[in-house]
Length: 336
Ligand code: F6P
Image (cartoon, rainbow, N blue to C red; front, side, top):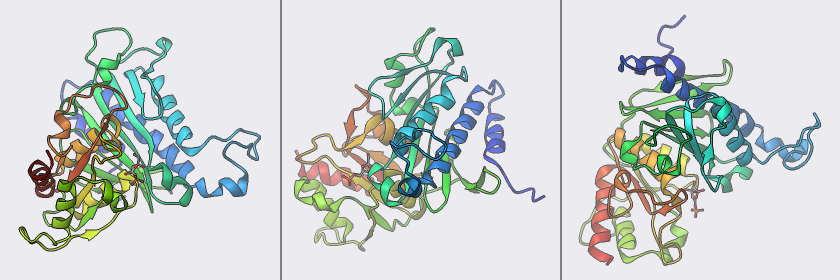
């Protein structure tokens, strides 16, 4: 056997050894999430068979009612995590309110927040989609977890990660000691360490934004984009290449590995942007920071924003630190 093969389970256990006081609850929670991701991955690879096999809202060959993939992913995350006794409360982008843990299962000390299947417009066209998650320690004392447990600043999170269902399935996570990526080996059904200690490359390659909405942007965002394209007369630079998938996880993942910036700004139609602070921006901001990058809402660090409601939206600029800081400069200079 090759001793270099490191499964996600082994990696999680080795991370746990850094904390002699750890009880193993957190490690098991990470493993629960990895297991849920494998189940979701199995279904996403069958998504194209929906019409062929008569799924989605219809009855399949086993006589079972089939769910839409995003609802299936949501149910999977909830079911795999509600009975373990490790969580106090959950919140999902798909649910309006917090998701309480049924008392008969036991109430734990962690809080799990997730976007079960992000990039929904890409599901039906066989383009990469993803799951995003973040873990906090509960702040409430005793009993069921509360909304307050779910509305903590990103700065206080314990772990964050995502799963990208692409040409292969990858899970990327951090507990604050670097960012590590695992690729699912479908043959053995296990995530294997493939990207250790990911750092955003110093020389960025890409900028990623939905340029179709440029007419709604502020002057600062337009000027910043011209700068990225190497067309700002005052601050000339080499142009970056443009890439935009429209799946946040996939766009972020590519830029994490190759260097660059993703942004979804506020605009005249969406005054607070489109993306969700708690489910999307915060977890990716922490991952970016752990990889040497930075995430901002255009004016301040995403991890310092106090969430006021579960589904609150935020503008997001994320990727190489120098590019995100430049975005902040353009915004403070041109937008009042
Ligand atoms: O938040 C949902 C989402 O699908 C993200 O994954 C993605 O980055 C964004 O919306 C795409 O939005 P648009 O189609 O407006 O560019």
